[in-house]
Amino acid sequence: MTDSNSPEQYFIDNLWRWKCDLPDKEIRAMPSLESLKQTEWSENFENLMRNRLIMGALRYGVLHQPGKPQYDRIGSIRKRIEIYAESGNKECLVDIANICICEFEEVKRVDAHFNATDDAIHAAIVTINQ
Image: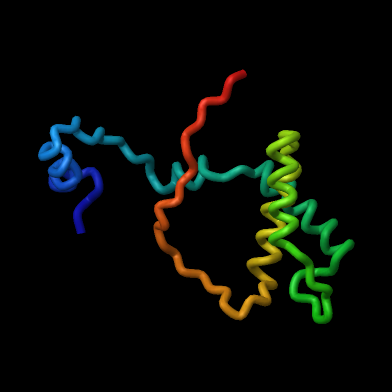
């Protein structure tokens, strides 16, 4: 396996670019794993999620509770995305995350699975006018 910052990897990454008369791919210094563990998480978001999960357990029942009613979680996620898009209320994002946790843990779909892949679906860069 080739190191992602090695000269060999730089050559491989840029080979087709040179062939197509494109500029070289920039070399980015990658932060350490420890640094990423510190920066790529939000303690505030996690605390808000946990507080609301506790309230949700009181309202709707704890995770994996036998006989717990089924909810339209996918529909609820869609509704909250629309509300967030219109209002900008970040509470919707916390709610969506919690609904996703509940769906992940209590999924009833017979075809549900986890298959980690790079599906090439990524967020687009947007310019926000302020």
